[in-house]
Amino acid sequence: MLRAFVIALVLATATPALGQQPPSPSKAAIDVAGGYAGFLDDSIIGHGVVSTTIRYQLTRRVSIGPELVFMAGPESDRDLFITGNMVFDFRVRPAGSRAGSVSPFVVVGGGMMRHTNRFGGQASSYVEGAWTAGGGARVWVTERVYALGEYRVGWEPHTRITGGVGVAW
Figure 1 (cartoon, rainbow, N blue to C red):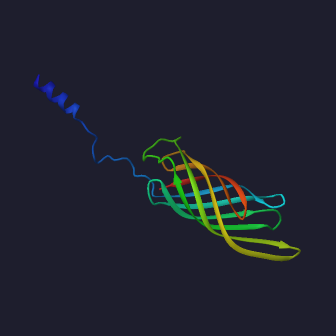
Figure 2: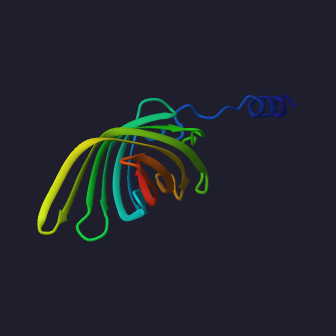
Figure 3: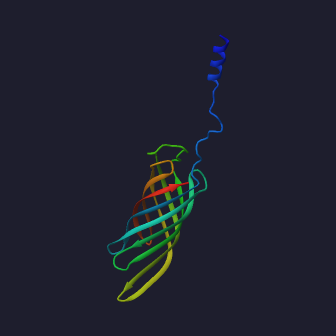
């Protein structure tokens, strides 16, 4: 009888081992994306988009980091954006969460844009300030790998939609 009481007491007061904590949330991530941008002019001027972003976590919901975006338009129309971004995650993905969880976010960024083009054999180029703002979502494929989709507006006036993959560590 005493033995049964001791076993019941041990089972009733069992707690998880403190040394077995789940993996810590990621502190940084890198994204690679591609898509389409439409610059507003007399008509929409379509561009292909390739981008890469590195993010560093400041808090559980806020991360910052640089972004490099290359856009190729018709003929020799090329644009290069270099911005610093701040991302706010609406849903913090707990460490150890399973694949399939979705993390929506908003993003704002500011920096510079370099535009180059060739008109009648003459090259032209200029640099000006740039900003973007938008949002999207990450869908976690594994503990550290995710797919993402994003929509942004920005200056030079354009809209862009991209999709890509990322790795958090």
